[in-house]
Image (cartoon, rainbow, N blue to C red; front, side, top):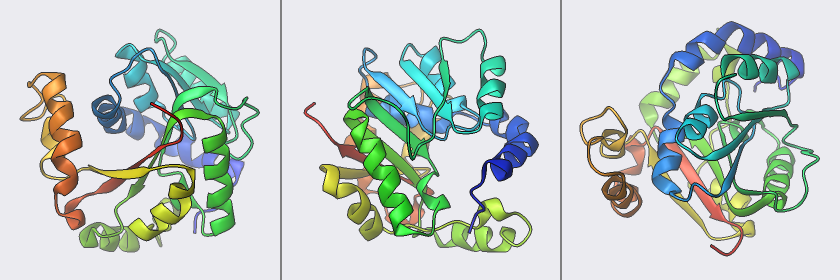
Length: 236
């Protein structure tokens, strides 16, 4: 499994940050399909490049991007200095944030970094504590066989691919205790076409939101590249 030390992530992000920032902010695009209310406050945990948090901020959302490595946060603050994005150093295990501070909290790939159930349980418990409405966890899809083979081939050369694969049962076990949990696709055949710049990206946002939330979860699970798990922790 990954070596989850501050030094490891400082070195990893230092090497890969330009590549990550050059990629489309797809997590942010999917969150825009799920959550239309721009008056809500959003927190991205373990944000790294913060490209998704910045995307949402540029779209008019109230967003805080965070990471526990100070150099990573400083890099994002400089990269997005003209953005509305707020950046903070936050440890996802111990956020030092008051209960119910953010309407929506989210992360992409955080839970897969830990082999210990107790670590994941601690992360989810803290995320639920600081979240008022919805918490979101995005993980690579354990049922996408080609992706699993690719990760297995890459892991010996790059530990960032040496991850924990979470099944739907795992996701339910960790998240459902905090509220009703629904899963949505990230990278399926239909939902990918709904994003800005793709074949159906020209459709009105309200139409794309309806298609994504109503139809896309029925796509074949083994074709999803990632799973977005959304847990309602408070009254909407």
